[in-house]
Image (cartoon, rainbow, N blue to C red; front, top):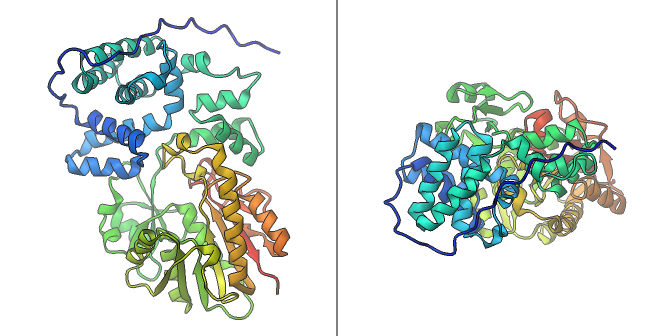
Length: 475
């Protein structure tokens, strides 16, 4: 076996501060980095979501233009790369990172990201980070941060990967996981779904680090994709008949007039495709009642509800959490969608009463890691089994609610086999439901594999990694 070249010598480690020493300087006037740092702190302390926290900070502090773009890049970048950054930082200190003050660690991650993954000059990245630490934690902590980050500057990202990653020959998945800043278990799950540990896996992991374009869905019957593209300056989506893509730096899509006027909504193109696919499955007999069994916060329910109106069908939506049910009502506006606050497994709705049912089940969300950068470090392998059990129960319930001959779409935003084909195969076997070939209901979408399920991928389709399977209840 070929051995990897000898690793570079590990730099001298820095000691974490014992406590705050010396006076703090006045707050540093660095709005972009301060906004990024405050968002990282909210994610760490409150398990907050960066995509919800950061826009509010930018609005509240009136940070716009280049500063807003920098804050966004540093926030999402630092969160995506956290595992790699922590491995590098751990190599530069003499104690576990768990013993480093949390606020200082947030700043170190921010500084290390700038050093390893941006073109910001090293002296500027170090100095700006040290200033933030000094203003918040004092001169002792600032000295510690300065020492750590100067050691980080001793190697570029590629060299640090060679230093901290598992050996590529003996643990190729562990190596590519570290090189692309993913937990190993997620890289393993992607490899199993792709059937490859080689270039397809590298491409899939790398796609999670790309800043995604904003996807909009035009509301059927109110606005066409071409009209929405003209109003927003975007481009019609390649696959969804209702989709529009905006540049990743287009700003807050909630500020767009068509979104405020409910002519469109922010929705990944993959989600649109899965919802629309359900409406394309041919049915014999009645086609009057549609149901979204796990409807909160309402994106797919609104798209389906709009299509139901055009088809002369009625639309029901089930959501367990009252506040998420309220979000569905708000998103629906004047659409005639009947919202039920209930557990989808025991909804109390009429058995066999629906013709088409969508099960957009709760899942690990591993297919949307590029949009939720903190999720890759927050999720754990132990999350999968209870979610898969819930998914099986929801899909089984859906097959009792749909009429004989009716169709159920099972949709999750993950490629993990235990949440996708594992769930569908088990339920189809127990219920004797017919597993349809979903690929024909995704016309024009390339590279859908051997079926019968559809697995979309960011690196192949530019969408979230949405999974969709179609089951028909036996007559």
